[in-house]
View 1 (cartoon, helix red, strand yellow):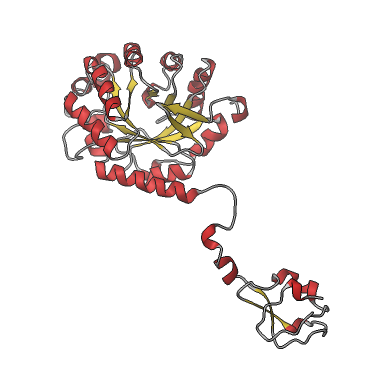
View 2: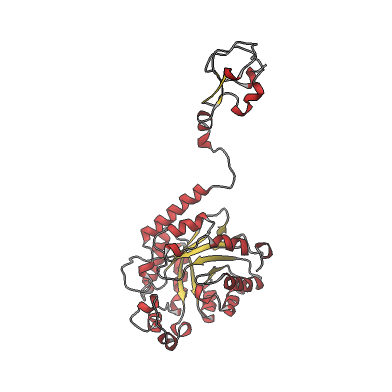
Amino acid sequence: MKNARSFNFSKTITINGRRIGEGHPTYFIAEIGANFDGSLELAKKYAWEAKQFGADCAKIQSFKAKRIVSRRAFASMKLKGVHGSWKRPVDEVFEEVEFPRKWHQEFFDYCRSIGITPSSAPYDYEAVDLMEKCGTDFYKIGSGDITWLEMVEYIARKGKPVILATGASTLAEVDDAVRVIEATGNKDLAILQCITNYPSKIESANINVLNTYKEAFGAIVGYSDHSPGDTVVLGAVALGAKVIEKHFTLNRKNKGPDHPHSMEPQEFADMIRRTRELESALGTSRKDVVAEESETVIVQRRGLTAAKDIRKGVPLKKSDIIELRPALGIYPKFKSNIVGKHLKKSLKAGSPIRWEDIA
């Protein structure tokens, strides 16, 4: 596998004028998914709510059931996961939550009109071309298509930023997809860690893989999260995630495959607020005394102090000196430098011993 120095992905990418990368705020994608419940007007309402509660992007999914799942193949499986919990054939559930192609342009235009970036995860070539026609600012490749390298290449060749989810993947499979993207000359890539289960367990999150991605690929990293709450999100941001995707619903109790593992609006807003607080707390890699420590750096440190009255001209002994707060005097590490020297003036007990006092 190549190391990060062999790849040449952008350290900062721009989506609809919003810069993403080191030194810029985390980019939040509100994943509407199937939560629009078959209504374009509800999809628009989701975009509006996502905008009001702080999201940068309102995202849908673009697929047709017949082009993404095989009824016969699914029927041959005994499923234990979320697909197995559905009481109907998988293809029927997918067909019910298709976002009609004829709605895409109107949804994209509406999002732009209210100031939120629209996007989608396209799951067939026609959907990619439709997104291009709608003027998408970036492409999301869902985890399930990471091994469909022809599609990965087709999307990357559009020349728009690519956000690649990596759920249920090995590092070698991620590497394959990243190499395909790199070979197209597209340098604008963000790689998202993801656990593809709905909901996923917090203990499965493996946030530390973000460090592996940064080292291996040198690209922007992020997290597509299906776990409860924002614990995983905050951990990811602390490790350098710059893109966060979370499913978004108006009511988790609504019927539908995506509602139960989605965040409600106030939760989404709280997650963003906590992220912004965390970003402020992360600061820089420099270790400095900050402004609010300008007084405590003195009052909580010790300085060399007269342990008793000391007369001018008398050589200083160790017993003449005590280390006390505040640090108005010489720092204790210089104590041996002044023992044996004498003072230019007499000092009362408790007086700081300053360099200008030393003859």
